[in-house]
Image (cartoon, rainbow, N blue to C red; front, side, top):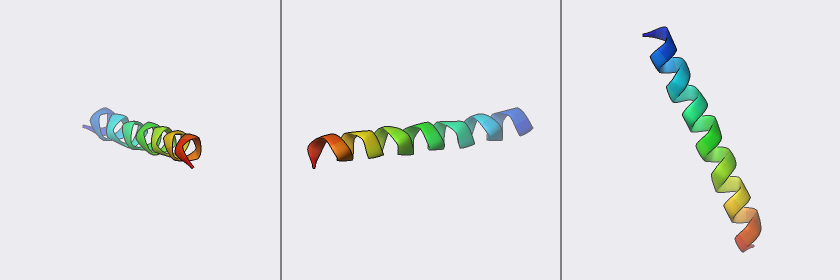
Length: 27
């Protein structure tokens, strides 16, 4: 379970990083 939650946390970080990159590109 711990690994599963760790993966979710990493996914969230990667997703936020991706959103920030896209936002910087658009604006």
